[in-house]
Image 1 (cartoon, rainbow, N blue to C red):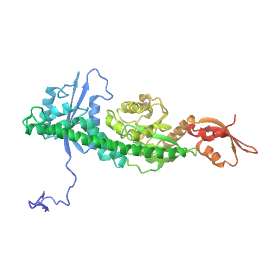
Image 2: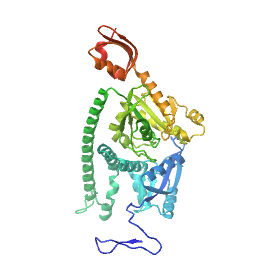
Image 3: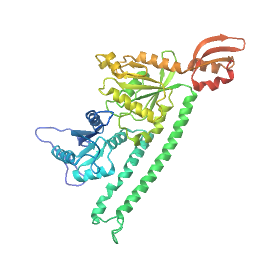
Length: 454
């Protein structure tokens, strides 16, 4: 047993006769949540409500929350006041009391009014949050770089601004329900509203400050990207649903030590590594933040600077957890996000990860009906990695542009660049230089334009 001495600033510990306790458990107690899912009738959600609640359970676990129960409701349209119907609200209230939950998490984004009404019904000891707030909290826990922390703070502030009103209802109660109103009278008029507007201005200033800092980060990233492009290495952006194994695959391809954990959104900050390809060419592989269905718009907007890495890539490597029962739906969620980022036009290779767990790989691939070249791999065991690299390299070669140039002998730098970054199909030595027939990345063509042969 452990206790605390009533003397301020002093603590003590004692042991009972049955259990010897060594040290203190300093981890905060995990909160207990009850989950609520919804589904509109006649709609076609990406995931059925049961599967979406399973994903919400994993999100809660990633955030350090224990799920004690769940329920869902199908309806024609959300209730204007409480989102779910009155009968379901009463049922949820009974269940959270029986299960001793201290939090209710909704699988869809709640309006400020919905959140306020539900908190009043469930009581002040029960927090009401939605999927968006949960994902933002996970991002806040996992952001480590200065840029990542700024992006998360921006997303959180923009999410909270319209929800500020619920924070000041205690002022209205203290003033007999009239605080902030035009009829509040002397001494009662406006304190809640004044505080609310003050907070909004403070948050607005902080949002502007963060955006300015992120613009600076974006400029630095652009300079870094330009310098990287001057090396003329082609870039492969690794994309995929969260927890598909992107970081593990990057580690296997490059020998990197990117954090790879069996949790959603384990890594947020982009990591770039150089990979030697089978044909001797070098490529840059960039790991990006994982996607998820119902990804909050605040996250997409805040992380746009980071996600620009995807749009500037030469090729996308889409990592799919081929063993997941909703693999097809996860692929669709990634494609939807790529479309939102205007990156859906880029060529793609698909890595069907965790293939070592499949009993019938060919059947699993056939069921997905993929439109891009796909390779079964296991980032854990290395299965299929060689074939994946060959497929990626072939896709990169197909992007090269044909060119014929005559390079003088005193421009050995260009000759080396052609061999390192392009593909030489034919070489002929002359008295004045080297005549090359081959293919180059489009971004390199301007450097060789003065030496092109007609």
